[in-house]
Amino acid sequence: MTNEQANWEVVKTFNTVTSLCNDSTIEFKAERQRFERFGPPTEAALRVLTEKIGHVDTSFQNTDAKESPMQYNKFFENQYEQLACLEFTRDRKSMSTLNKRSGESEAALYCKGAPERIIERCT
Image (cartoon, rainbow, N blue to C red):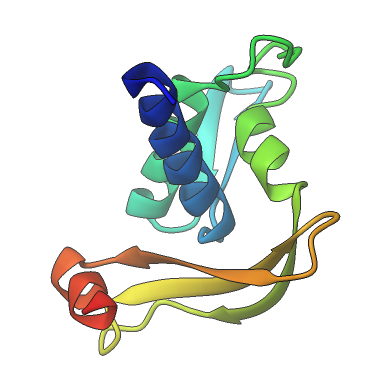
């Protein structure tokens, strides 16, 4: 695997985590001609970042953002079944989801949150 391929794998993993561990939504309101967020601002910002990064697969047929403002997030979400969710709390300072990818037998735990809390759980 080349460095570029490895970098894209990291980007795909980032997009997967920010899509799966997120309860916010972004919608386009035609009457106001603007995008609106529903949910916490930080969560919505992660949704927007995933949309701005886009998809690394050039065969992905994107549509107008006004028609589908969460198309890339949905692309990642649709590949997984969520089996469990630990919502963000101030004590845990993280959100975790247990997901199984379509066609795979094993599940994976995806987490996002305060770096110090995530790192202490990894060691």
